[in-house]
Amino acid sequence: MQDHRIVSVYDRRVETHKLLLMGNPGGRLPADPTIQAIRRARLRDLIDELDGEGIRSWSELGKILAVLNGTDLQKLLTSEVITDEIAREMEWSMHKPVGWMDR
Image (tube, rainbow, N blue to C red; front, side, top):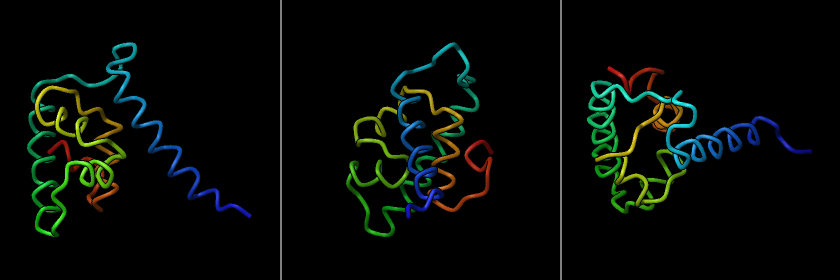
């Protein structure tokens, strides 16, 4: 028998990744420059934390943080919108409290 909790976490991560790739569907994703700057700073903190654990490959970082490939993760550091869904996924994967990416 399949554990539905595992399936739902996997499904949520896949949906999060799809939202990132679609850009800003219907204008419902955040684009506030202040929030984006804070999220990018927090993303750098997470990358530094993983670097301290010996994880340096963009591909591995992307998989751990939000089921992203390395290229998409690099884009989040410069230009792509870090959506609410992606921010919450990163918080969850790194055991941070909800909203940590926004403060």
